[in-house]
Length: 226
Image (cartoon, rainbow, N blue to C red; front, top):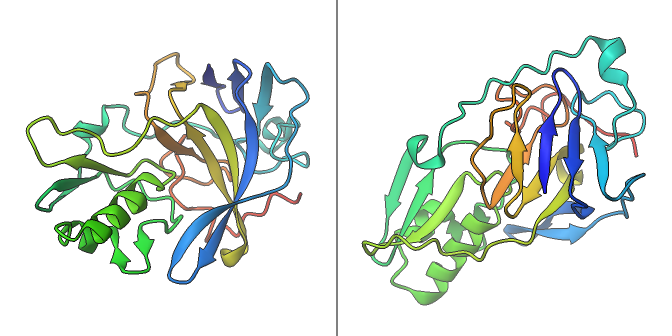
């Protein structure tokens, strides 16, 4: 199962990866994923997802990247997550790792506070649990909770491989493409990106950190039109 990025073109998805849609939904002072519309690829084994943000058949590619002259140059730093860390928050029993790649999905906020604050209060079992949920539901993989012991065990289950089209009606926009589980992403020049449990790919075409989402869909007011 892999996703190949085509130069100035779409994402080619191979390996019969399940495709769905989920909606970023506010619930009290936190966010949850709600089921979205059914998304059926024309070919279950291989399908092509729009990367330029101009397709009239979103989330699928319709060739609009050619007519629009889309520049899909990949600018993201292709090094392992642990080498990209920009922040570490230490609690008593857990450590929160943060690489700063924000897709503005807002799952880092819970009813009892944000994930950074909750991590510092992890002696309370409930707040610890809330911190782990907040970290593990970040679609971009920006946040990872690990145990504070020498083993640094990752405190989340491995996700089942899937591709999820995200919608964000609260902000009036369509969000990124959440890739979950051990899916290999291959750059346009043939280099492999590190396999992560969670990454969020840009589909509005405006990210300054391609191929990953940097929340540019919000100021761009990107709506996929479905």
